[in-house]
Image 1: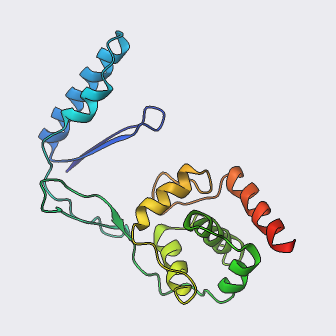
Image 2 (image 1 turned 45 degrees about the vertical axis):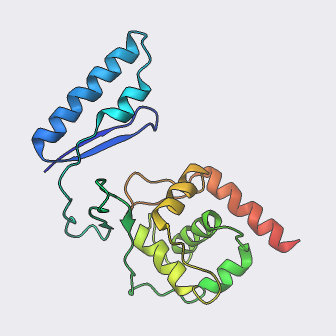
Length: 187
């Protein structure tokens, strides 16, 4: 199994599959990048070049993050599926959430990451830990169906940061938003 990750200022192209497939895809990415450097714009080519689908991926042992296999429509879905972490003591979570009153899922993810860091000394936290917080609060809020997308959205808004889903931290923008949420609650 081979993997290629290219991050051109968060444009991010990740390719996994057998070595032959990854080498072929790498050649195409490199050629498209060279075309872009020489002045001919090729973003459309990059997006349409990878029509072959790699074989379904096996879950890595110990990762805690599961991925979906084939969707049956000729595409492979790589949406991560969280796993409940039953070892977390989430006593006090509802009070912490009430102190911040997050209005949307991206804010809830931020508040959960702050709770895990500040109250349980878990820093960085994982995708599974955040999911476990949603699960613990399921009587007062819904667990997002597109969980991985909500995590990505929270990252895009600057509330959390991660390279791997088991290493989620809170950047300065997230810290500032926590202060804003706490101020709104005290008013």
